[in-house]
Length: 170
Image (cartoon, rainbow, N blue to C red; front, side, top):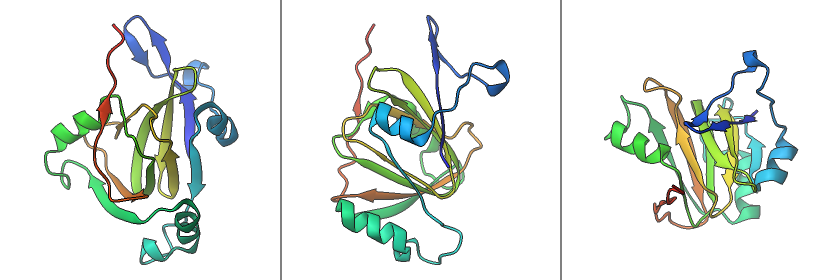
């Protein structure tokens, strides 16, 4: 299940809180949905040969009108132009369409802005599926250059791959 917590801001930018310092409070899924508009599902990806045949996923796609999908592996070994692409993923941006991701393997982090413009970090892993609403500013990272993530990406139409970077406030 997705884990989420607020990031602490200071004059030097954003820093990640740890559970050990006692300031990292995990947020529940209902609270996340209320504060952000994000949607979450858990899909059993271990016991299927073809993800497109998963009954839960088929039902979600039909109900929400998702018609296009593909897979991507994100690692130095598997993704051409890894440094360039992960730098773009880590730059705050938004898409005009809903962004839906299902983790098939590995771990990754989405940082999203809540309705009050505060950062929330989401850690997701195998079986977690998330839908970011259209226009939600976010950024993504693997947590390290040696990370690995395999995602099933789902769209309502053929993707345009247009990211709109956020203009800096300062």
